[in-house]
Image (cartoon, rainbow, N blue to C red; front, side, top):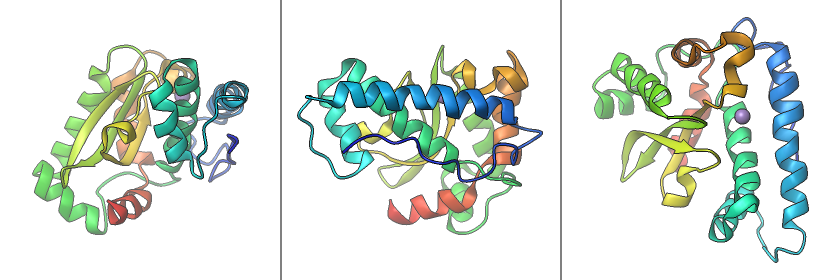
Length: 197
Ligand code: MN3
């Protein structure tokens, strides 16, 4: 299979004022697109057969290097776009609300741990909400790494590479992460992923 640049699930200005159309013009149209183009170049002749992006990531992880970095970034970014929605964030609804109470004690504690996870990821990477061993947990990954390759089920992700927030928040990564949880987090997507975990 070939990598593709997916259309965003909303208009590029739909998440304003929290994430600007200008950020999407770089982050989706340039950064994500570059991973698609480079990943497809590297996939030619790599001999990988996969039917889904998830299987492609797992196969590329065995080869590592630039191939994995570009394929992993395609998966991570597609998951990130879906992890947000207009008027998202705030207290969760549905099955994930009870699961957050059970595994984090409270929504406020989840938020604290998610933000701390993203702040604590040194350099470029990602902060995830995952199901691992039946429990919701916060996971961090560096560069293009993803919990998919360690057997956890991704539920939500936030990109903490500087390109994700520098236009809108400059160096204020903690404010970006708090804004993601308060205003952007797509609990419908989280519930759909939880149902598959
Ligand atoms: Mn990014």
